[in-house]
Length: 440
Ligand SMILES: Cc1cc2nc3c(=O)[nH]c(=O)nc-3n(C[C@H](O)[C@H](O)[C@H](O)COP(=O)(O)OP(=O)(O)OC[C@H]3O[C@@H](n4cnc5c(N)ncnc54)[C@H](O)[C@@H]3O)c2cc1C
Image (cartoon, rainbow, N blue to C red; front, side, top):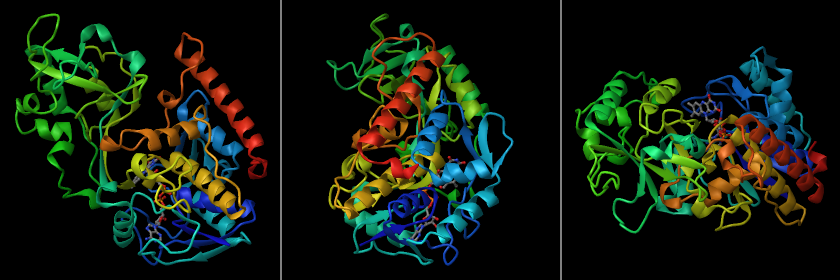
């Protein structure tokens, strides 16, 4: 039995690497160079389309912990990244060409892997099959995925609002209430007076934004996905009728409707992460910090995920995927990489490892496995399959995803250190229990 893999990007190469190590035959389809995506420039596998950095190597940083977990799971990305690294302080950055060529050579030399350079236009009929065609999946395949999963379960753009660490919000500056339900306290509402609003508005208008890529120009947004700064450019009062409208929100401390309101919505049940509702933005990251910290109560806010708007093909994973990364509709069809709604090179690669493990287990007649939620990999997957399907937005690795420690620990770094140590211990146990030592 062969496993079909579509796409040799960051996720695809990890899938193939796992299957090869498991002694499972693979048929890998990659459309480049026959057909290029709007962002890739080379025919190589695992091409980094933008930054050459795989971010921090410290395990007290979410990317650092994810890297360490991937390394222990035998990641090809990490293996080649270390070999092709360039000096970048505490980050792992690579020579992008050497990195992609290095990965391509290794995959080409694998005895279990057959490579076909051609575009797949329909979800293949053969099983098991893993789709890892990425954020720039070709149009025909995207259409086939949409038909298979259902009309509403494939998106072509993300419009992400920033996510704030719940522990860094000053809750004395707002009140809990819901606009439409007097009995609900689901939102944390931050009132702004006219002076505070004007200060925020003026700085928003001055903020630097990220340039649109050539293939993103001319994008027509749905009104609800409009970047906040673009909406604001229509006039000083626009936000007061949009994401900052105060209607229906009476501040219990004054008994009045404030001039403007910023609403924060829980991203997880425990309230460790909060989304700033309707604040999707193209502002540069430091600008997001500068401008959004002008909002009362967010002066010391830490950003777990910055806002952004990208061309991005991704599926509604909370509705259509199992935690094993197989589809609910067909347990022998898997998805991996950015198309599942994770965001980032490493995150994409990490889901590739898990999809690869499970596709290999299917071939060997074993039950698929789910990585523990205490690990960064497991928490990411846990998030994408359990998030709210009505408002599903891509997610990168961050400490807010991990279940809290059983004891309260003061000090962010100490807490992160303990969370990381727990993650690595639990990962090792999980690998032992499921005979995954062969990956190392
Ligand atoms: C413009 C852009 C910039 C980004 N910059 C960063 C960044 O700086 N840092 C970061 O961490 N993340 C970044 N990302 C997000 C993400 O991490 C990367 O896109 C990452 O490459 C995703 O990995 P993947 O394996 O899911 O998809 P990809 O790496 O894109 O791999 C998918 C592969 O599938 C192939 N393919 C597509 N359709 C078909 C088909 N029909 N048949 C056969 N093959 C097909 C593609 O050619 C490609 O090789 C960026 C994304 C984009 C779009």
